[in-house]
Length: 406
View 1: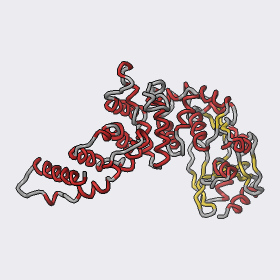
View 2: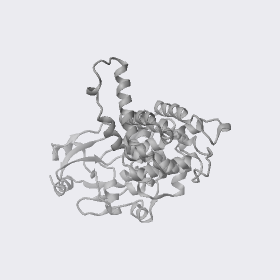
View 3: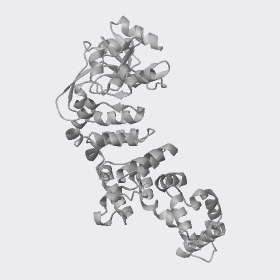
View 4: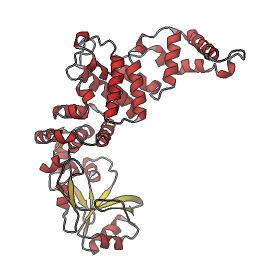
């Protein structure tokens, strides 16, 4: 079914069809629009299902249908309004009868740039809250005072600031801060979703700095907040404290790696420094072990993807140690551990380069080292060796291969 046919059907039934949300925003921004979603007004469910019998309802608490339009499966929602009745994202009464206007539906959304609609038939822009103006001014602004009804909107505003490079206007920043109490009780899955999206932007640090400025970093990502004010030797890290260093590192890694697990490894690489006693700073002895404990606590509060955990553990343990390795045996052992870890040569090299500005030669030429080491296989082990002797022989031969490359 064509979009025009969909719109004409809704109009004949006495309603209106609108494109809403991110598609409209991106169209106005001049970016490639994605994920076209629709909202309809002025029709009931019975009429809609009669018009479009192939539509499949997926919404539980309010009507959302899946429908093939222009060759793609699209979401079609009924305009709705919401009234806050409790805490968090479940604390709402939802109204979705045919009297709800498109303006009422847009008013319940998070920020003005996401609170616009395009009427399908006339192509008229519906922009009651000034979203197009804020796009032009590069501003993130809450759509209304109801922004605070869902505390995760505070994280969305921070993420949108990072995603688009827009500044958050002061009143919205204040409303973000007012979400602090409810954020502490939000399901960790919702926080995790925003973290995942934030790590996908060009400069993830903008997200975390916005949360810090809004007074929310402590209740959302306490392991990062703990780095604020943790002193560094400014001769090595002129960017400032451990938090500033982590932000700079994460952005540097994001510039060379699109892999979220590697970006997270950069974000987590120094979290153990906050646990080092003040008297031992700024040397931070043993911060690797403490970092693993901090990561485990982060995972306990917010279940992290297993891939992220594997990569972060390796970065925490190894990013400092790898720079001190020079003996062939240590190099062979390190490369063996790295070969078994998901972070890969490209990932740990990105983290180390962002952290210290260089990587050892055995990482620069890791392919050459691996080729030499992997020429020796289990098939080459002498048949008279058994048990642990086989592993020791294989390791010795691989060390010898590394020695020949030094």
